[in-house]
Length: 225
Length: 225
DNA sequence: AAAAAATATTACAAAAATATTACGAGAGTA
DNA sequence: TACTCTCGTAATATTTTTGTAATATTTTTT
Image (cartoon, rainbow over all chains, first blue to last red; front, top):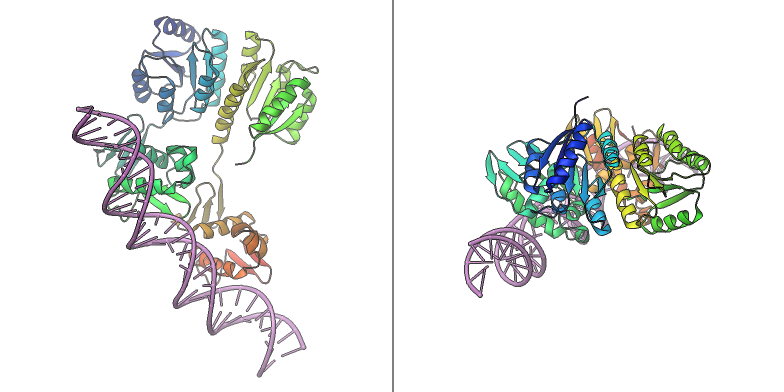
């Protein structure tokens, strides 16, 4: 079996050293990042099999990092923290973390939890770019290109497009899109969708009046082709 | 969304009560087993969506129970214990547990970990497709293809077709179709059916005058072939 | 604090879907 | 044959849903 690659995102040198030694002697290949920015860019260029993510990073809350990573990284993510705060824990899980350990943790337990998660997620292949016709979405950099040229999207426009593209070919309901982009309490605000779908079409369709990519499915939702 | 069913295997009445109340108010359906034997037999007859398994059971070590369940149960299993013993934890993970909590645990954290595991286990759900001759219905994406080409259906047309196809080969009464698609108060409005069946036939039949897929069963209903 | 960008709100026109109405064809029956 | 019942179909009306522009407000940037 190939060695699993583990990315450790943590700014504390001590922890990095300790974890590197532990994981390497357990047969893992270890990559270190000392900031969220580095961690995200490494994940983009060389997706690891598992990520250990510290919550207390200098350049971001870790929770934000988790969200950003989860937009396209599908492998297991284990959160590490010194604070044993329940709110943080709940928040982390709901943002897509797969496990949460409080420092100082027992290395044997960490290894066991890693084994368990790696066993679960052997089949999912991480996809960090989406290509369809003349469109190319880079989920890592949150960049959309049309015929090679960068098209500027606002945050909301990008979020909408990212979800639609991830369900390519399938109908995505209005309620789902609203929930994912605007939040659970916006599921009835379908006029938001119409306006942002219209803006997206202006930007990505050759002829926004005859959309080829974002198809309307009346009284249900939209479909990305 | 359907309620998830959680099976709690624990011999302590207090814990059972506490967990039942917590989980039920969080929207789960709870089933209780007070022994390993009962737990295994319930899992066999009505597989739950998730199992909470205590390690200190009177009729078996819990670890054994875990192994026995894992021989065929594939859903998430969370271990509970009063002993915070690393060997036990490692052992549990390597026997196929998906998480491990030491009592007393915080209920918010437990719920978050459960949500996380249930999300994982539901996303490895295979696509749900119906194929009959040259027709292919993708129930998840709400998409109909005829000879590979997407055929656009309105919401009502799709709902009608979905029900008919799910009862393939059997007669579906008019009243039933009307109730399912239009609602319980429309059971007598059979002319709605005629019109929408006609539209469906135009879209899916090679020759709508000689339908091969949607067969009329005079004065009873319709049958999908 | 001002300017710019993004998003939210409002209002109305356009398009699509659905409901309604009307009529004819075919099968079975007296 | 005439009658009744059920189904299919076309044409039209109504309702629902969607698209779009214009403006207001909020947020972000400078």
